[in-house]
Image (cartoon, rainbow, N blue to C red; front, side):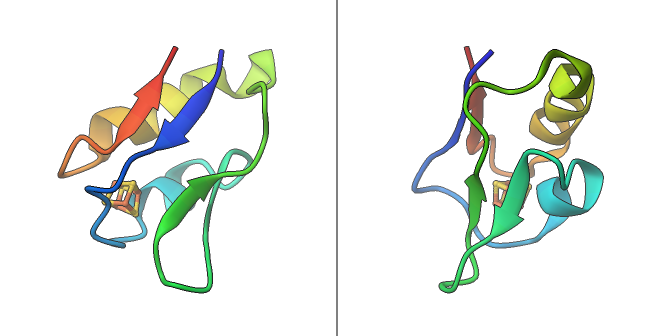
Length: 61
Ligand code: SF4
C-alpha cells in the first residue's frame, strides 16, 4: 500500500494523531505520508486515518 496526501489538506492533524506511524505534519502545518510503502501492520491505521480525514485528502493505493 502507498499513501499520499493531496493539496486539499487543511492541516487538522487528525491523520497524524490517528496513525503517526504513517502521517506527520510538515513545517507548513500540512500532513504528509512519510513511509513508502506503508508497512502492512499499519495499513489498517492508514485506512482509519483516511476515513477520518474531513476533506478526503488522503489517498491509499
Ligand atoms: S486528516 Fe486530512 S485534513 Fe487533516 S491533517 Fe490529515 S490529510 Fe490533512
